[in-house]
Each structure stands twice: as C-alpha cells, then as structure tokens.
Amino acid sequence: MKINQLKINTLSYTHLQIGCCKLSVDCNTRHRYRFKKTINATLTYYILNGFQLALTIMKYLSIMILILLSAGSADAQSKKLQKATFGMGCFWCSEALFQRLEGVTAVRSGFEGGSVPNPSYEDVCTGTTGHAEVIEVSYDPSKIKYDDLLEVFWKSHDPTTLNRQGADVGTQYRSVVFYHNDEQKQIAEKYKKELNATNAYGKPVVTAIDKAGPFYVAEAYHQDYFNKNGNQPYCRLVILPKLEKLEKVFKAKLKKN
Image (cartoon, rainbow, N blue to C red; front, top):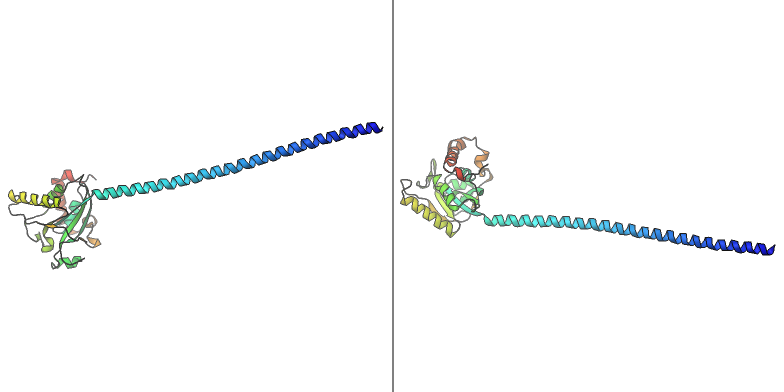
C-alpha cells in the first residue's frame, strides 16, 4: 500500500513539475510577445511622428524656397525696368497716354525741375517754384525702347510752344525731357536735332532736355486720373481726343487688353 502510494505521489510530482515548466514557458512566451508588441508600437509611433515631422520640415522648406525665388524674380524684374520722365503739359493727359503703351509698367504724375522741395499742386500752379508737371514712366526696355517713348512724347503734344500747351499757360506746362543717363540724353538730343533739321513742325522744337533731379509725386487724386474720372468734361474734351489719336498712330505699340 505504501509503495503504491509512493508511486502515485512520485507521478503526481512529476506531472506538477511538467505543468509548472509549461506554465513558465507560457508566461515567458506571453511576456516576450507583449514586449515585442510594445517595441513595435513604440517604433511605429516614432516612425510615423518622424515621417510627419519630415513632411512638415519639407513643407516649410518648400515655402521658403518659393518665397526666395519670388523675391529674386521680383528683384530681377525691378532691375530690368528703366525710368523715363517727360513734361508735356497737364500730367492728366500724359499719364493716360503712356499707361496704354505695351512695356510700360507704371506711370506716376508729379513735379520736377524746381527749387522748392516737396511742393504741393497749389504751389506748382503759382508758377513760382520752377517745377514742371511731369510723368515718371517705368518701362521694360525689352518690350519698348526709349526711342519709342520719345516718339509718343513728341507726337502727342506741341513741342514748339514755350511754356504753354493749349489753354494751359505757365512754366509748369513747359515741354521737357528729364534724362536719367547719358544714353537717354544722347537719344533725346539727336531726335530733337532731326526734328528741327527736317522742320517737322514748321517751327523750331523748344523742348528742354535736362538732367533728372528730385521727383515729387503729386497728390493721390492726380494719380490714374483719366481712368477714375473719364466722364469729367476735361477728360472727354481734352484727353479723349488725344487717346483716339494715340490709337490711330501708335496702334501697334498699345497694350492688347
């Protein structure tokens, strides 16, 4: 009886050992699985976040590159542009004409050639400041040449009347070219000489050709005047006929839109 009982106890102990070993193996397996799962989850988290961070960095770098390229392009464009300054009577008329030329990017009405700094329109109208009403033209020389601008200038007003354009009388309405470099000076002087040599107007051209000095922008209500006040009597009676002539004589040089 004791021997049989001992065998049973021995067998039970053996089974217990096997069960414990199996339990231990199962626990270790579960721990390894959970650990592996945790590691994978952690790696996935950092990979995804790292990828999102990389995308964010690339996005901002792309934006910065575009900004720099745009700034460079704008700077290159501004360096390409040149200026021309003309006085040919009332700047409302002059501005409206030159705004319509292909290659002209901007036209500003203002005052130049006087001795009083930063004059007002009322100051210039007294005729005592020495300024002329002028337009400052920004243009792209690859689209329109300075010679072309001069041609429009001389054919759009009367350059034979001293200090007068139509009903506008005074030194502020004088015919004048303000050159910005030696090349402009030479071209303007040559053109004027040819006009007088061929007696193009039947009378001498009295247009002054002076070196550009300080340009003072006129008050805001003078800017883009015809486009904003086209129905005003002065615009319809004085400016509109000049625009109609421009369209006939210089049709090929006008903007398409």
